[in-house]
Length: 144
Image (tube, rainbow, N blue to C red):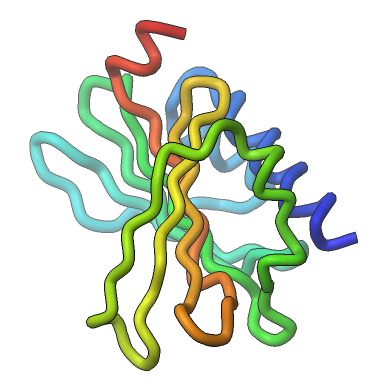
């Protein structure tokens, strides 16, 4: 059930249009709290009361054509590789290890789905999901 739920969340979020705080609040089903802001980016945080993710952060660029959404799994129970249908995340673009992230290092896999980059960050040894990141880039949006 978790696998279907995680992929359903991803499918719902990649359809975000327009890239605005209001759109993401509606799609997430949670209010967004304003955070840091500069001439280029506006940051929001949120808490989710149900589902596989507990909290996250949204960054919207000032031009309104780029965003970064970071989702953190609910722990416990957390999420393992069996909880996400990685093939449904689109073509795999690559993987990058980072052994310096405590306590056991991470490996980030990159996928492309519907013009959105989807990244899964896995703990190296226990293979638990550390975060799921969706990235909308202006060039990808214009090409889709």
